[in-house]
Structures are given as structure tokens and as C-alpha cells.
Length: 282
Ligand SMILES: C[S@@+](CC[C@H](N)C(=O)[O-])C[C@H]1O[C@@H](n2cnc3c(N)ncnc32)[C@H](O)[C@@H]1O
Image (tube, rainbow, N blue to C red; front, top):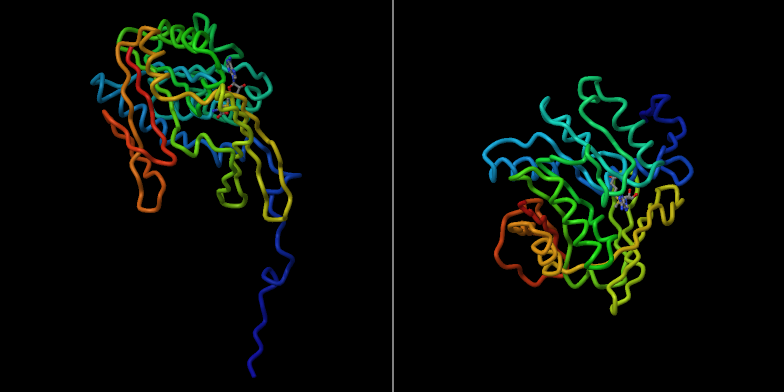
């Protein structure tokens, strides 16, 4: 009989995952699970180039959090500059330490994360080619008046020819109280549409994380916002003075999901869940 001797390494105890509720950093988990900043910047960069016939230079990332998208923008070309705005000092500090400070000095000098309310972007947030409001963050404005004020302020911050990019999700599932689990490598991301008032469309959502060792990070992030409809958003963009807005709808893959390809459409189709970008031209 042949005896197989396992190499020492294979017989030693399995290494502990750094992804447990006690050891993982919620911002790292968020960056791995939530926003695909590479795909987002691909879309923004290419769409601007198609519409304007040249590359954009100056980008402002509203609700920037950790500045992940701004970092992606300045990494693309030496001529790109970015400014990120967020009201949460602690999240900005995390982003500076982990996303911005490690950049080479020449790249680092082209990005700033600023602790400011997006309603008051200041002079350094003006004269932009592009402003981004991604991850549905602008839904924190719950009245038509405040959202219109925000859109007006964005429009004032753009140079002539400037473009405002927003993301959007819709479909019947958006109006349901439900949870959805998605495996992301070493952990599970949980999107929890926890509470919705159908009279106001105010809703509360959480992000939770679950780990292979059975531990959980509950309510790692909380969002209190209004679930807006596409026509409401486009009407408010027009009322704020944008000359037009185009909806770029994501196509379907063969497995009831999105294929990551966003194309301009004149008309949508009824679907349980859909994602789109809105491209608003100054
Ligand atoms: C959905 S998170 C976006 C996080 C970001 N995409 C990232 O990668 O970290 C929403 C962010 O909006 C910020 N925020 C909420 N209201 C704001 C306001 N009026 N002005 C600026 N930032 C705001 C929050 O502090 C939070 O960081």
C-alpha cells in the first residue's frame, strides 16, 4: 500500500480569513461590493468624449465618501483633475489615508477631497467639465425644492458644454421591502430595503455583511432617502435649466441580470429591477 505524506503546509491549520466581522474594515467591504468605479469611469469618460468630441479634464465627485471614483479619474490621464465633496469628515479621512495618500505624488496632487455640503460646493467645486452624483446618493434630498436647488447648483458649477451624470434604479422590486444576498469573494453583501412608506416614498435601506466564520456586520451602512421616479428626476433637471437629459439603460444578460452595457433609449420596458445612467447636459 502506498502512503501519501502531505506536505507540512497542507497539514497545518487553515489560515484565518481577514474577512470576519471583528477584523474587516467596512469601507474596504463597501469598495469591493458596491460601486464598480472602473466601469463607472469608463462610461463617463467615453460618453463625454462621444458627446463633446474631446476628453473631459475637470471632474467633481459629489457624495464622494472615500473618493474611490475620484482616484480612478485621476489615474486615467495626467491631464485629469478631481475634487470630491462629502459632509462626513471621518469617511473622507479614511479615503485620504487609503485611497489618495498612497498615490504617486504627481497623481496625488491632482485630487482633493473636501469636507463640504454639495449644496454649497464653493469656488473650488466650480468650472467643471463633469459632475457625478452616483450610488443614488442624491436621493437623500427628499423634496422637489431641495433636489431642484441641488440640480441648479450643479448646473452653475459646470462650464458651458459641461455634463452631469447620475445613476438611477427602478422597477417593481425597488418598491418592495426585501433583502438580497450577493456573494462577493470572501463575504456576502446584503442589500436590505428595510422600510418604505408608500405615501411619501421615503425609505430606509441598510447594507449588512456576512462572513464565512458565521460572524455578521449588521447595519454597516444606513441610507435614509426618497425613492424618486425617473420622470420626476428628469422634470427637475429640466426645471433646474439642463438643456436635455438622456437615459442610458443597462442591457440584460442571459440570467435575469444586467450586462453592464448602458445605451441611450427613448422608451423603457417593464422589468422587476433595472439600472440606468442619466446624462444631463448643461
Ligand atoms: C451612498 S454614500 C456614497 C459613498 C461613496 N460613493 C464612496 O465610495 O464612499 C453617500 C455619501 O453622501 C454623503 N452625503 C450625504 N449628504 C451629503 C451632502 N449634503 N453633501 C455632501 N455629502 C453628503 C454621506 O456622508 C455619504 O458619504
